[in-house]
Image (cartoon, rainbow, N blue to C red; front, top):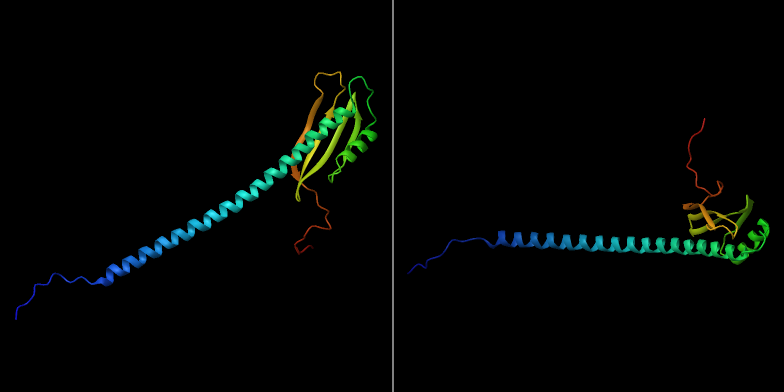
Length: 161
């Protein structure tokens, strides 16, 4: 009987175990990459909605400025603040009111335009007479949290002495 020459015997168990671990690691990285991509997509969509809502409110603020300037044309007397406020509030029946107060030679307009359910774009604009070269002075144009009624706010049950 001749004995066949056999090479070293390596068990296939170690290679199989290494292959299984490699496949598990690659699968884990694929799942993590997929979940990260989905979270980034949701965040991008939320950000796009917030930016769109802000620019819509910003456009309403610019339209408010243009409409107020149209209501006080060159050569006309300054309209009463209450009348101007009513006309502007009626023109922009988008859930906000415009206040107008006569100040110095011009009118001080203020409005709180809703951006999202928890934010408003607060405006304070000074409209000068048409004869002035600089017609508008923007005193406030910023996004702020919407004020909530204290009765609607959720309170924590905190012990008070």
